[in-house]
Image 1 (tube, helix red, strand yellow):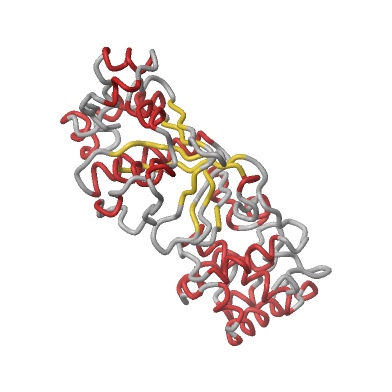
Image 2 (cartoon, one colour):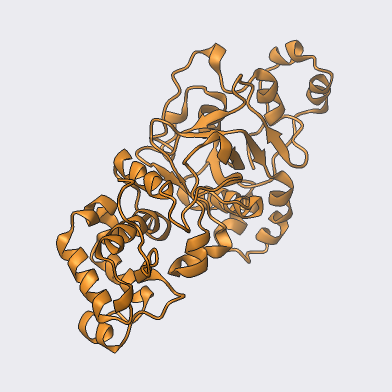
Length: 358
């Protein structure tokens, strides 16, 4: 697939969805009902093209011919290379299908297609190099399963489908010291690091998913983390949820995070620029290597007073006032003292008495 032509002299990548080139004219509006890249985007959505996936588009001769004819009838006549148009549109469907319409890739072959396109050397396509952040509102069961490697995640209906960790106790993703630190001494922003030889633990997207939204901005991720916990607590199911931000290095995840610069600079995807997204496209068997997790306690705590006023909705205000949602409570001072002094053996004998909440 890497041999496929994605662009050609005078044929810009993602041409039909570019906003830096005047393409459409009266003829395209009259004959095809398309007068802008946004119109074409809506047409693709209406026809279910994003849902059929990128490889479906490669085999969609009628769709490809219609798009080519539309481009020929537009002001882009001199720019058109049929093969480049077909393949770059296929790549657009693969990526924007997820980012714009939450359509997951259906197979690992689609992941291979995207990676090979991004490795082709075509100008504008590159993998993200740097640190990526994902903010989530997660349950106790999810934390046990994803960070500590313990059983129990399958008991949470909302998160059912996450890959179960079959490793033995001696292979747990985090050590007991971090396990205790996580629920005790919560003050300020808490950082959790994996106690593994590799220096990371592996996160698997939920169920059949192969793509997740990540950002190059920790601030953006924190906003999603606290929003996710609020929505799940007030709208999904009763229970306690915690805001968490997972942190990953692109260097540990070769060919996973996509650089979105070309999307933000020259296509209709620019409307999403604030998210600074670097989406992760990973095969289900591989997952994503996480180097640490952040509990953004200070940022979350600051907004509770504001939420109690009802400005963010009565459901959230009720949840805060009733105590269903509140900043995390601390354990008693004696237990904190034991932890500070490293007297872990004594802590092990104490019945777990924390409240696992926001």
